[in-house]
Length: 529
Ligand code: GDP
Image (cartoon, rainbow, N blue to C red; front, side):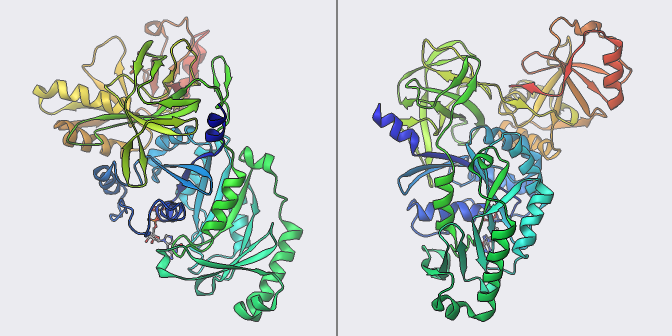
C-alpha cells in the first residue's frame, strides 16, 4: 500500500495548449531532454512541416504512434512521474482538446512572447476554463524580440480574463535575453547558450544587486530590472495557490524553449505547484485516487493508429488504484467483465507494453469496438460510473452518402467508427434506419477529415450536402413523445448514435417557439457520451 501512495503522489498529469507555432512541440521536447528521456533535443519525430492545418493533421496521422502528437508521453524527472498529454492546436478540434483536458489535472499554456495572446490561445483557454483546473503560463521565445512583459501580463488578464502572478521576470529579450529573476528565491538565474539548445543550458544564480550581475548585463538592463522588481512587488497580485488550483490565477514564467533558457526553473516550480491526481466525481460520490481498487475512464479513441493492423486504441485515464496487466476489470457501460488487451504506453518515442500503471497515468488498450468515450472501467464488484464527458453541440450539418452504392457496408462502418472516436457526431432521421446519415461537426475542418479518412482508411468516396441547420437541442424531458412534438417548419427530428432524440433548427428563435408550443418539453444544448 505504501508503494501505491508513493507512486500516485509523484504523478503529475497535464496537457499543453498553444496557438500553432508558439512552441508546444519544442517545449515538450525540452521537458523530455531535462527528464533524460531523450539525449539530443531535435530528435523527436512528428515535427510539423506543412503550414496548412488539414495537411498538418494528415501528416500527424501518418506519424501516429511515434510522434509527440500521439496522445501521451511519460517520463521521470526529479522524483516525479510526468504524463504529458498532447492537444490539437486547431480550433476545429477543440472538442478533442476538451476531452483530453478531462484526462489532465492541469494545463500549461504556451504563449509566443512576440505575438501575445493569439486567436487559438483564446479558444483553447476557454475550453480549459470549463474544466476548472490550474493553468500555468509559459511565455516562450524570449530569445527573439518580445513584447513588453508588463503588456503581456495585461493582455493575458484583459483578453483571457484570468489574474496573473509572474513567478519570474525576464532580463532583456532577443539577443539581450540574459536570464530571469526568480521572485520567490529573490535571485537572478543567468544562462549561457550552449549546443544550440540540444543540451541542457548552463546557468548561474546571482544576487539581484550583485556587481557580477551588473557586469554581466550592463547598466541599462540592470537598472530596468531593479525598476521592474519594484513595480512588480508593488502592483502584481500575491501568489495564491487556492486561486491557482481553480484556474482563477495563472503563475507566469518567461523563457525560451529553443535555447533552454528558463526550462528547468519552470519545470521545478510547476511540478511543485501542481498537484498529484485528485479525487474524481462519480455517480456514487468522489473516488479517491488512492483507493486501492483500479478505476479509469475512456477519454479518447483512435482508430487505425497502425495501418497494417487496422487497430483501434481506447485511451483511458486511470483515476484510482493500480492497473496490472492481465487483471480482470469490469466495463460498466458494457456490463461485462473483461481483460484489457495489450495495455500500452508511449515512452518518449516508443510504444511499450506495460505491466503496471497507477492513478494519473494514461493507458492505451486495444479496443475491438466495445468502448465509447466517457465509459468507466473498474474492478468486478464495483459498478459506479464516472461523470460523463459532455459533447459539444455541433454547429454544421451535412447529409452524407457514399458515391458507390456497393460500398454501403464500409461506409456505415467507417462513419460509425469515426463517430465513436468522437471525431464527428452522426445522426439519423427519427424513425428511420441508416438510410440517410446526418453528420454534425463543431468545426468545418472535421468534414475534410471525415472525407479524407473514409477514402483512405475505408476506401469509400462520399458526397456531402451541407444543411442549413445550425442549432441542435437534445430532448431531455423523459416523458416527451418526440413524434408528437408540435414543431416549426424548419425543425427536423433526429436521433444520435445512442438513440437519444434531438431536434435540429435553422433559426435560433424557432427553439423558443417550439418550447412555447409544447408544455413540459425540455431541451438541452449538451449531450453526454
Ligand atoms: P508548436 O506548433 O506550438 O508545436 O510549435 P513548435 O514547437 O513546432 O515551434 C514552432 C517554431 O518556433 C519552430 O520553428 C521552433 O523552432 C520555433 N521555436 C520554438 N520555441 C522557440 C524559442 O524559444 N525561440 C525561438 N526563436 N524559436 C522557437
